Amino acid sequence: MIKKIKTTNTLEFYSINTDSNAHIPFIDTMISAGFPSPADDYMDLPIDLNEYLVENSAATFYIRVTGNSMVDAGINDKDLLVVDRSKSPSNNDIVIGVLNGEFTVKKISKTNNKLYLVAANKEYKRIEITEEMDFLVWGVVTYVIHKTG
Image (cartoon, rainbow, N blue to C red; front, side):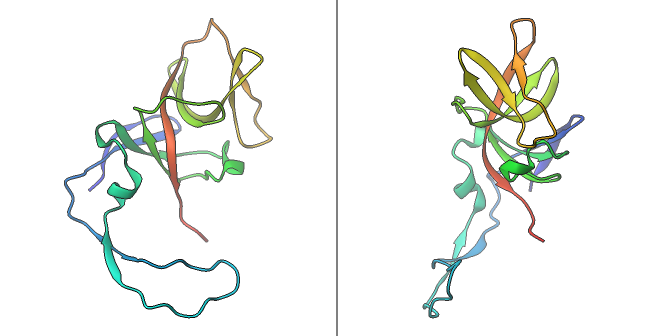
């Protein structure tokens, strides 16, 4: 069970429940994205997506995105992000930031000793983080979950 804990203008935050015994069958075979491969014998193995997606459950949250500023990075409106607050951000990581009290999801970029928040949509300008701004990296996005079609 995922529990909703907070909503902002652009993001909804959900806590991780690692006590769940929900296991989804996992077919342990590679799927060809090119030419079809001959059918392999496969085995339905249980998989707990929390074990696969979450490295540090105490510091990890699911966050739902609203908006289209990150579409060119494969993050669409209503996608679910897996965010780890224990990870230190590196240059070009996608992060959840708090800028002047507002949450946002952007790529963090350091260029020529300047820090920027960069959208992945040409309709949005990059934001230079200055000393006058109140800015904090809240967490690093580790996975994006979205529906296809």
